[in-house]
Image 1 (cartoon, rainbow, N blue to C red):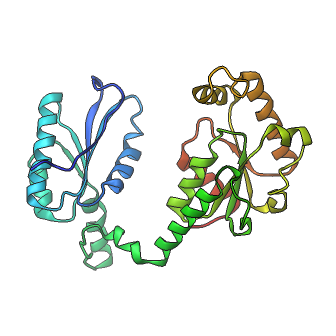
Image 2: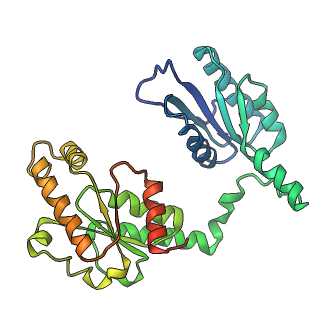
Image 3: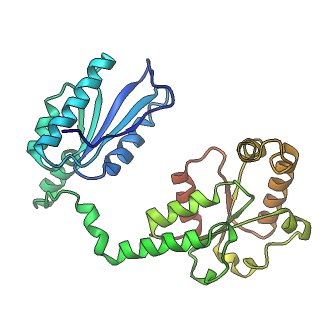
Amino acid sequence: MTSSLTDQAAPDPIIPAGRTVFFVSDGTGITAETFGSSILAQFDSLRFRLRRIPFVDSLEKADDAANVIETQAKEDGKRPIVFSTLVNTRILERIKRVQALHLELFQTFVEPLERELDLKSSHTIGRFHHATDSDAYKNRIEAINYSLAHDDGQSIKNLREADVILIGVSRSGKTPTSLYLAMQHGLKVANCPLIPEDFERDALPSTIAGFKPKLFGLTIDAERLSQIRNERRPGSKYASIENCRMEVGCAEQMMKRESIPSLSTTTKSIEEIATTILTKRGIGR
């Protein structure tokens, strides 16, 4: 039987200084990968080959996954690192037969909580994803649809419903931040670009001027912005460093004058950007 395996390899398949890391789960593996990746980020001097093995929900699939991990260990000449969120102990034991550094997230956190709370957990596979029938899940889907409809100023309808409206020059990170806030926090986020016409008028777009308490600005280093834009429109005035400096400078002046909170996305992750927005705007999930 062929195992269900999604590879997420680094651009260079040969990573002499790194290690292969597996995220093994009876569900999608997203929880294991998110948690594991945050830990691996503390070792930024190494590069890791990341491989996710989802839906390991039977002994047969566990054997397949174990074979994949074992084969990789032989190829690397080093034992892999395995982050797992497996609930079934028999399946977990099959995986643990392989020589690897095994980091079991559920046992690490659930068992101490069981002792502290004097209560047994449900040990239900994929428990998190049973939330699809909840109001919170439906609200999150609604937030995603709202953010897609209000991306890049496409729609000005129902802006009063927005939890936050992101503004900034083109390619400053508004769209990915909007979708992250919608998917992870269930927030309705609109975003609106600041364009040269706004700078000529020296005023916010009229469509959002009445929603200042909802506005949050994203800015970016002009050199980095030029690099990003050149990937899309190489050699254009839009991507030129002179134009990027002008747009970023005008946008930052406008945000400062209008007392709109802002941050630079140049060196920040989406998670950091989102957390800053939530904190500065006092928004909860």
